[in-house]
Amino acid sequence: MPVKGSDIPFGFGVWCSLKPENYDAYAAIIHTDNNTSLGSFFGWMSNSLPYYDTEAPLACDVVFQDGGVRPLIKVHDDTHPLGHDQVNGITFDTLLDIYAAAGRDIRPHLER
Image (cartoon, rainbow, N blue to C red; front, side, top):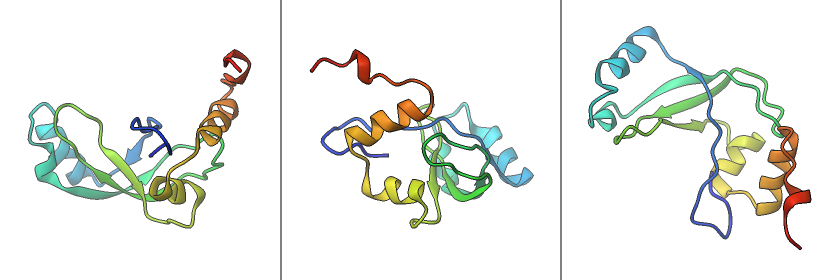
């Protein structure tokens, strides 16, 4: 998701379920540079995420990318806090809150 004031986005590594035939189509070309030819598939994000208190599963689109890059996961519900932040971005303070919620509070290590 975009971080306001930065060119570097933040992302979680998540698992999504797909229909078996959609997974098989992806698995058949995962090691090629033609993944975007698949477009996107409907999936269910199957993780609970710190800070967002997501309750799995969460409806999403799995958007395939070329170049050995993991697929993008786009939450359907833009009123859900995670979906909202995917669309609108997060502040650096929110990013610090996410790290803290994951047990990695880096605030004490930042210079003032």
